Length: 266
Ligand code: FPP
Image (tube, rainbow, N blue to C red; front, top):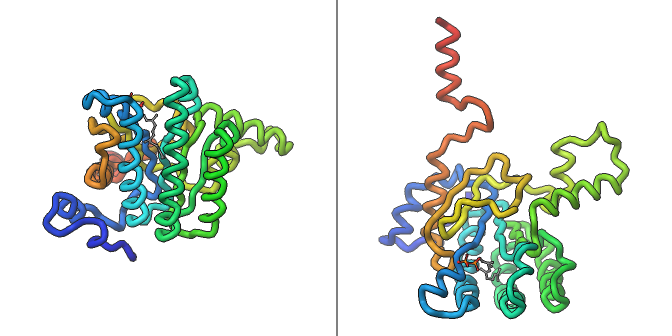
């Protein structure tokens, strides 16, 4: 294991104490995040909504870097849904230009941390300038073998499943060969493990059409913290909680199986 605790938290900090309680051998492989609350963050400060989005970039930066240092296989961030096109044009334009700015500024960090960028969603819906910036970053990071960083852009879970069905039909797959594994292989996330942990900020208890297929067995973790305030301490809290949960995948889990075995003996 090459995870360097000292690079993740300064000794004597709350982050460091929490990290000490995390088992680095049992980390989630894929963490997905619904970044929510930028607008509320701005409203609390009597600022325009876009100020919240701008402040959200610092949280994106911190989360990506922390996730890479924790050596996740995949980090997926929900940056822009297909439904978000309904927002006022000025807000959409600002989000697109923040995205370009982020990619320009962070390309070096992505390369230095061996991170590979992938866009999940309808890339073709994005304005040309943002699309070109994304394509250039994906191309430059293509050979990286560390964490995969999925940015969900113009993304909708139902559209993804419909796109997968279309690609299966186009490939001429016979009906009796269609099963769950095949569908997974036709999703935007083909080849990646499903999320083990889904985080949502700002307290909302909704999935919002995000990774509908892939989160079948994900553990959900919701925090009241608004996205622009989200930092590695919150990510550590989520992981710590995740490690205390018993994942049963529909089975009984070790405790239940123990009880069953005892019952069988009676
Ligand atoms: C939800 O907050 C957030 C978004 C729709 C966009 C997320 C965008 C960023 C964090 C910044 C840019 C991202 C990248 C990757 C550079 P909301 O506006 O729905 O907040 P509200 O529910 O409080 O109104």
